[in-house]
Image 1 (spheres, rainbow, N blue to C red):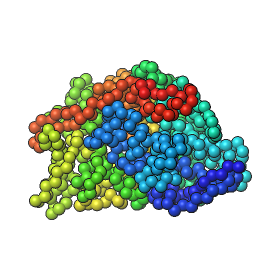
Image 2 (cartoon, helix red, strand yellow):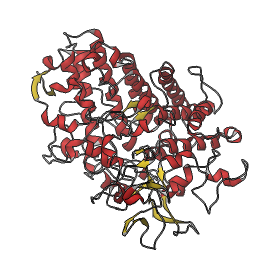
Image 3 (tube, rainbow, N blue to C red):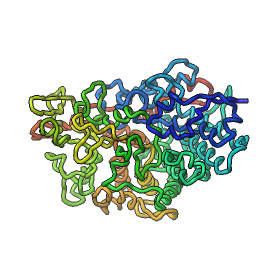
Length: 636
C-alpha cells in the first residue's frame, strides 16, 4: 500500500490567495494511504492542488525578481545573472543558477540533501517560495499520474459523485500535459511520462517535438471533456465559492491545447534542429491549433471571457480591485499561485529605477532595450518605424530627431521616457520628472532635482517600463506617493489577448490573413485589428495584409507589443527561428544629451546565439548518461 503526504487544508482555497508561503508554513501534513487520499473529493482535491503550487511564477521565482526577461527585450547590468549567461551563451550556467526560474534544482531529483530544491516542502527561505521549472514540472507530472492511476484506473473515489471524479481527473490530465509543455518550451522534445515511474526505467527521447505534442494534445482533449466552464456554477465549487478564479476550466484547457499545438507547428520545432525557415509552419498542427483556440473564443462570445477595454487595461496587470486579490480582469485564463505582497511589490517595480520608488538598495532594474522598443513599438499610424520610414505606406510620422513623438499609444502607456512627469506634486510642489539623457561614456543618468537635493542613479538604456507599475490619477507610485502595496501585479501564463494573437498566427500560417475557419467566424486580420482598435491605432495596412510574409512579420510585431515584458519573448524568437539574427542578438541603448540635440544607438551586448546550439537549454550530463536513448541537445 502506498502512502502520500498531503496538505489537507488546500481545499479551503488558500492556494489562490497571495499569501501562499504563509499557508505552507501553517498547513498540517498528514501521511495517509492512497485509499484515504482518494476516497473523497475533498481529500483528492487537496492532493491535486499541490500541483497548482508547482506551477512556476516566472516573475517571482526564488530570490531574484529582476531577471525574468531572457530575450532581446530586457537588459540587466549584471552579467552574472541568468540573462547575462544567456547573452554570453553560457547555458550550462543558466541551469545551475539557483536564482533563476529555469533552475532545474537537480539536487532533489538525484538524491542530494542540499536545500536548493525549490519544491513545496523545502525550508530554504528563498527557494521554498517557488518550484524550479524542471524540478517542479517533474513533480507535477508524477502527481498527475498518481491521480490518474488511482481515480481512473483503480476507481478509488468511492465516496464522490461522477462530477467530482470528472473534475479531479480533468485537472490531472491538464497538468500532465502542461508540465510537459513547460519543460519542452526550454529543452525541446522530451519523453511523455504517462505512468507512475517506479525503480528502474528507460525513457527514450522521442525523435520529434511533434510526437510529444500530440500526446499532450490527447490529455488536453480529455481535460476539456472533464473540466467545468465555471467552478462557481458547480456544486463542488461551492466549497470555495468566490475563490475559484485560478482553478482550471474548459477555457484554460482549450487555450493551452492550442498553444501546445502552435508551438509544435512553429518553424523551430518543424525543422527539428536540422533546418529552419521562419515562415515554414506545420499546417496540420496549425489547423488543429485554430480549432482549439476557437473553443475558448466561443466561450468568450458567450460572456465567459472578454478583452479588457483600453480604459480598464491596467486591471489586467496590477489594478486588483481589492488588496490581495487576483488582477487579470475579464482576460484572466491561468497564472501561478501568488507569493507574498513583498514579492509582488518587487516584481511590479522591477522596471523602474529604485531611487524613484524606494530609499532601499539591493535590487537591480530590468531596463527595456532600445532595439526591442524601436523594432516593435511603432507609430500612431499603425506602422512599424521601418515601414513608416519606407515611404511605401503614405506620409511618414517618425522623426529621428524626435524619436518619442507620434508613437503608438502603447509606447506611452507602458514606458517612462525622458521628460515624463513621475510625481506632479512631490517635495514642495516641485515636479519630479524623468531625465534619462546620456551623461558620459561610462554612465547614463536619471536625474531628479527638487530644491537642494540632486539624486542620480544609473539608467542603462534610456527607458523604463511600467506595465505592472501603479499609476493612479496621473501619478505613479513613488516614495513620495506610496501606493504600490494596495495592488498586486501578476504576470499570467495565459490571458485572452494571447489567445487572439496565437489564433491569428496559426490561422494565417494555414489559411492566410483574410480567410476564417469553419469553426469560428474571425480572420487573422480581424483578430489583430481587434487589438489595434482597442489601442486606438488604425487597422493593418491593406498592402501589408496582401503580403503573406509581411503580414506574419506584422502579426509578430503586434504580439511583441501586446505581450511586452510578460516573459514570452525568448520563447517566441526561438520558435520563430530568429534568435540568431543580428536584429535579435544585439541589445542597444538610446543615448542623447540633455538638450536632445542628437540621438545615438549604442551597443550594450552582442548576444552569442548559434543555431541550433543556443535554441535549447542543455541537459546536465548526468541526465544523458543514465541510460541509452537520451541524447543531449545539439551543440552541448
